[in-house]
Amino acid sequence: MTKVRVSLDLAESLPPLEGNANQLQQVLLNLAINAQQAMPQGGKVNIATRYNGDGYAVIEFSDDGPGMPEEVRQKIFEPFYSTKGQKGTGLGLAIARSIVEAHGGTIAVDSELGHGTTFTIELPQ
Figure 1 (cartoon, rainbow, N blue to C red):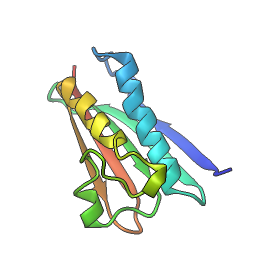
Figure 2: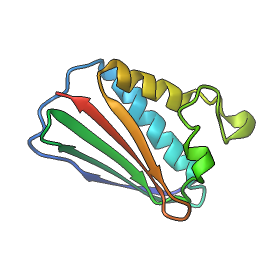
Figure 3: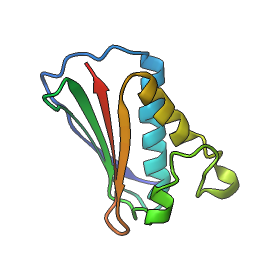
């Protein structure tokens, strides 16, 4: 069993978001599963929330896994793109982006080989 440590850095004064809770949970669950699968030897995941001052709640989901090469990073939100072979459908991040955008938000990724990956979600409040 892979051992993944989770740390939380949650803003105390962040107002509730309006949206479909089940869909937004699916986004976060997908990011958690991807992080766990990217760290087969274990690692750390940090989930942080904050208000950006421009009317958006920000959720940052970071892991200290191996990171992604640029050619992979550019394709991860494309439907049916997967680095998992037959173990993946390539739909998780495409669906996550669709859900976030349907809520009026954005999702972006920052990743560098050897330095982990951070997904940043911004949702209007």
